[in-house]
Length: 198
Image (cartoon, rainbow, N blue to C red; front, side, top):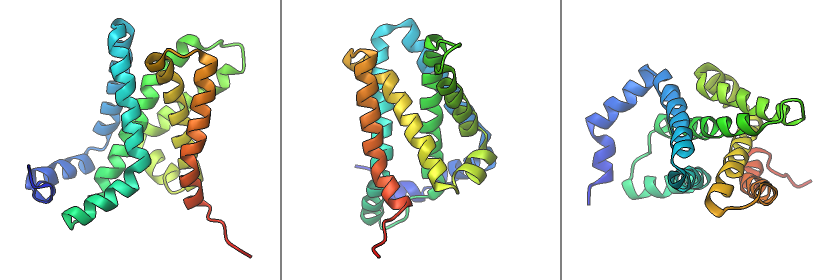
């Protein structure tokens, strides 16, 4: 079994991190391309749809347990996991999710209805996720806005993935996606807005 501590200290890993810092736009491009590629694969081969959707939800499960998992890994490795690596992973999951769901929503949206506002909001979120100055300097410092993007993206990803994986109707998927997104956002809300006793 490889020594994870040695792997993180490995100069090749450090070089990759430095490369990512120097060319952050490549992460955005990769997230965009992988999201669109996932949609194209799903569109052309229905049997791949379930796998792509499951991988998408597994990446979201990682995001939900990321803080706890990072603490456990840091204790095991006796070394901090590089923060830039975690930030880029989170950003890439947002990008991948948004650019995977956007084509689905653009195809199914009734453009002269209220659906336009939701699909437009997803498009704006997608743009913010690929423009680093907006994502890191405007969105990330505003915890409540970051949480809103996070919850919106999770909701949209689940609304798209659940019918593919579980063969649910849109109404069933909507209820389950909304309940799950709200439930999973509660821990983050509690951290962002702690309740103080009087």
